[in-house]
Length: 255
Image (tube, rainbow, N blue to C red; front, side, top):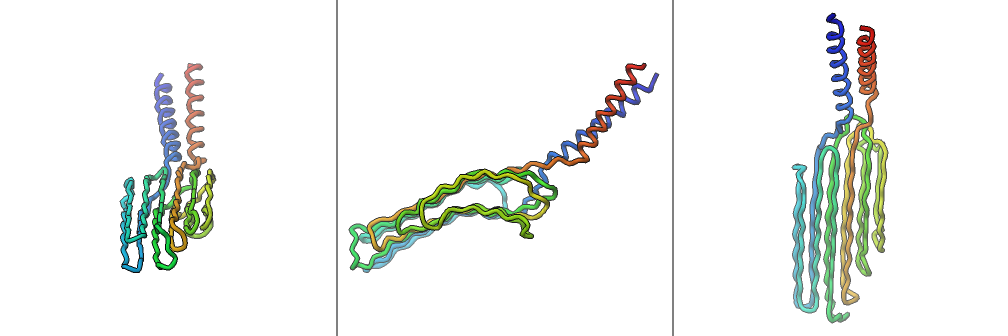
């Protein structure tokens, strides 16, 4: 008379172990190691009557908290002026890393006089670098877009890369150093246990020395998501629990 109760407890235990195994398989085994995120902007003008310059930066290192910051600078002297700005918003966790950033630079000489030897220049950069370790295989999805529009007499690039420490995995995406381009991407695959570094950046520079005004902008946006590769042992445990349920149902029917 007591056998059904004993079997019921055994089946319940088997199912509990099975579900625990499946839950463990679903956990993202990602260990965050280090991070550095920054925004930087600088501007300067040089004329026959003197020079002016300014720069500003913001950064975050090692705390893994959400980052949302921007910098902007501007200078002018005589007929020359220059300005630059950079901003970034990023989030880091053990299941995903996402960010967006933009850098702009503008330089202007009005009116332009080639005999004045006046130069206006500006530059900006925003970037991040995140290192993490995978202790179990992980499925990944990396999607986003890179864009650059440096214009004439400007130069800049946006890029995203993901590389393993031992060189077994390498992925690099970027825009041309000169010329306008927008590059969307959506990549997926499997990352095996290793130490990885994810980097992203957008930088721009503008120099006005042979025409009145130049400007440019670059930007990036991406999201990297992790999910665990199913562990065969978890499925075996789950199957054991189902077999136990079938046996229990059969016992009750006979009883």
